[in-house]
Length: 263
Image (cartoon, rainbow, N blue to C red):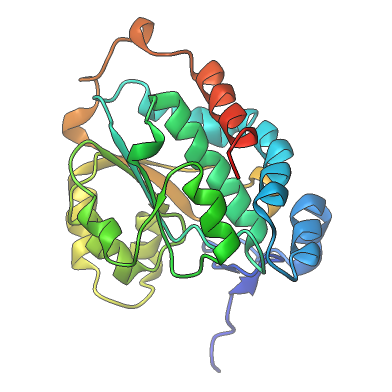
């Protein structure tokens, strides 16, 4: 008898692949837990204006700053060596099926930029799914680059945010040896053997430390089966805690910039 698929689809379009011995969550369960993401899904039938994007971000930002996920990210980033660039892959569109995930992931991006003091000139976004409205909004907080250019910008001292990026694309991204990567849980990838070549995954994991993220922020699957990785050689070589900008204040300042984007 063929094995029944354990994959389910969440309310914002992502496919969930549950761990062994854990029953998949149903669509109804997702909707009960995530009224905000479900509302976004229902509303985004046409591209949002930059002003609408900014207004949606306010409650999501507050949720992010109170989450275990943000605490995890902040605890990883604070002790690291100076990080001077942020490159974001596969963010998705602020309109459409995955809009709620895009909003939450963008909130994380801006939180990281604020925490590390990365200027907008060193924040880059790459995704062929961006609409014209997405591009207008993102150009107010960073630079949108064409496919292929993002990989060229990845090097040491760089933070990569590539949540849910296709494994084949992620392979090319990590070749630049970024200091920090937020992406799919690659240990889960190896456990599940989800197709493709796995040697590059093993090679990458040998040179990093990592933590699986608490992904249930907002309940919409924005960070399901995701993790944060950092190079082993960089941990503990950064500024002292007393020299760091206060994390929460820096993040709040970053999101003040969102609300004042010249659009």
